[in-house]
Image (cartoon, rainbow, N blue to C red; front, side):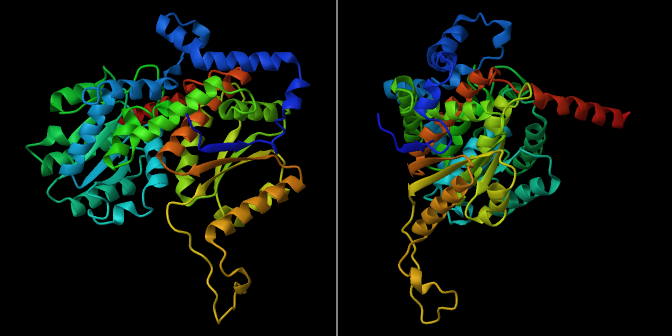
Length: 465
C-alpha cells in the first residue's frame, strides 16, 4: 500500500485537541460512521433487509475497486475488467471517435479523468499523436440544441463513413437528456453504418429497463452493467467510468489500485493520519460552528476544473438534504484569483477553501527567460518556473486568508495520474458518506432532483393537449 496524496487540515480548525475537548459522543459517532462504511452497510445490503430509514443504501461503491481488481487478477480474460479492456481495444482499432452519452455521474467522472490525464487538446491531435486512440466527445448531459448539433457536425466531418461509436450510460434508459441524444445519434449512426451497428453501440445499463431492451433489439455485441447498490455519482470505478477511460488509453488498473489503496488507508489508519476520516471530521466541525456554508474546491491546475464539476455533484446530491450540507463551488487558479479572491478575502466569512494541487506536472517546466526588453519587469524572476510561480501564489493566498481567519485546507497529489486520481476520487466519496452520517442525513439517493422532472413532464404533456 502506498499513498501519493497528502492532506493538510491544520488551518481548518480540525485539531486532535479540539476533538478531545468535545463531548465524547462525537468520537463515538465518528467511529460508528467508519464502521458503517467499512462493513456494516455492506453487511446490511447483503442481508437484503434494509430498514425504511436507511433506504436507499448504495454502499457497494466502497468495495468496488477491490472486487474488480481481485476478479481481474484471478481471470484476466473473463472478468468484468478483462471484458472492458477487450472492448476498449476493439474500439481503439475500429473507430475514429466515441461519444459518451450520460448525465451526472454517468459522465462527469470520465470527463474529469480525460481532462486530468490526457493532453489538453487531445481531440485536436492526429490519430498517430493520440496513439491510435479515438477522439472522445460527450453528449446526453443537456438539452442544448446547438451543442448537440455541434457534436453531430463533428461526427459527420471527422468520420463520414460512420466509423464512430456510442457508449450510452443509463441504468433505466429513461433519463430524458440521455434518451433524446441517444435517439438522435443512433439515427445518424444507422444512416452511416448499416451492417456492423451492433459493434458500435455499447450500452452500460441495468438488468431491466428500456435501454436494456433496446440493446437486445439492436443485438449489441457488448453490454455492461451498472452495478447494484452503487449510485450514479459513486459509479466511476465500474464500467461507467472504466470503459471510456480505457478506450482513450488510460491505465484503469492503476486507477483502481489507487482507490483500493485509499480503502486500505481508511480501514487501518488512525484518526489524524486518515485522509477521508480527517476530511469528513473537519467539514463536520466547520458546519457545527454554524458559520461555514460554502465549500470551495480551489484547483491549481487547469486540468482539474472538471474534477470540480464531479465533486460539485457528489457533495450537492449527497448532503444537500433536510436544510443541511455546504454549497459546493469550484475555483480555477490562478484565473479566479482575479475575480473571486476579493470576495473570499473580504466578503462574508462563510467559506471553506480547499486547495487541490499536484507536486509534479506532466510536462517539463517552462521558466521565465531573461530579456533585453524588460517592460513587464520580469527579469528579477528570470529562471523561476511556472510551477514555482503557482506554488508561491497558492502559499500567498493561504497566508492572506489565514491573516483574516478564513479556514483553508490543502490536498496535494504527488502527480495527477491515474493512481493519484484513483486515490482522490475514492477519498472524496468516502469522506462525503462519512460526513453525511455525522450530519444525520442519508448520503445516498437524490430525491430533490426528481421534483423538476415531474413539473417538466406535466408542462410538456399539457402543451400537447
